[in-house]
Length: 463
Image 1 (cartoon, rainbow, N blue to C red):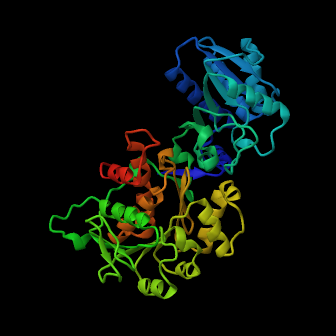
Image 2 (image 1 turned 45 degrees about the horizontal axis):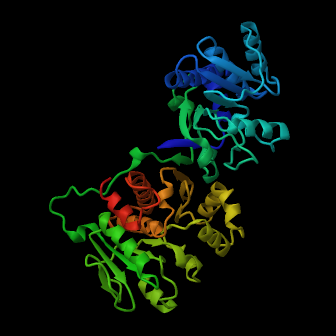
Image 3 (image 1 turned 90 degrees about the horizontal axis):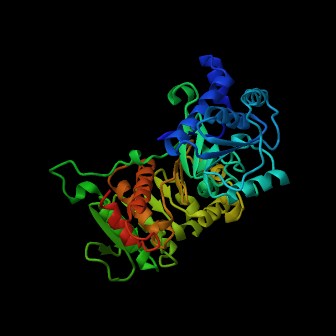
């Protein structure tokens, strides 16, 4: 798990004040990190186009040009001159070496974007747009220095952005790099230390990036356990029976000892799933909303929920009049997709927005909801899943496009319900269920368009 920051300028200032580093020294380490990556990946003599802005991100690029000189065919493009003191100093050093700004070439083996970094805070002008269009049209390997130009700190995109294969970000990870908008333009990510190890550079954060190594499977270690040891998930089975079957099957395969589908009528189920018309007495967690429709009247739902069992809420329950009351319960996990989350925000009086507006402000609305309902755990689905409770927030970036398939969300709800039933607290259930869900999608060995919910469940058994 790694810290994420909206902005790292305060960390830079702290490094200068506490560790007696200088801006120039940190810049040199940034350039060395870029140099090292290029030397590791590209043969000597490769053509390296470095496009520099006029500020300190451009100065990083100018320093990189100096470090690569003579070993590579360095092509420097400095369209806006040098304005910051460090940019002027780095340019002076290049002048002494005889390295001058050139026109953009028709191609290069490597293209380095050092135009803006994380300092961009204004709309792009026409000259910058033309440069970014030209860079994106080149066929070489593209590296963003700090972050892709055109990506703002809040994760939104300008009219044009540099589409990187690799981002070498300076000092620490920036939260904006993990917005859904940014997923297509960031590529692989490397964090460069700036003269001190990142554990000294960083301070505690409220946002965290989940790593594959954070996954903790519900492995069974007690040899005298029985099925009741591992909890009983009750899935409320509504009009779309398939959604409940998928959620129940996922819960059973992720460690729940028993799974029962609650239905008003007898339905045909897989043999391993039980069926009941009333809530089993030994229930330890309830999954509600997936495919529910209008199958249950308010009185029936009230009877099902007349307890303190932890809940996983999804889909149809978010537009039910009972939903605001459920938010008052202490152990609940919500798993909405973006459109469903806009319904939640409206129903709770937080905001009336459409899904596009939400997608441009996922971080802000996640924080707003969790501030209003600090006991609830939110799992906001998307290309990068956001998970929040109270003042702690997590991003799971490990999902793949294979999950863009009906039923994938029902699998996620079942995984979380299984962990709740086994006694995990709601936040840990959400984190581990989401990680397992995402990593299983990576491990699917066949074409990514072909995955089914049951393929995903099978993949989870092999984690």
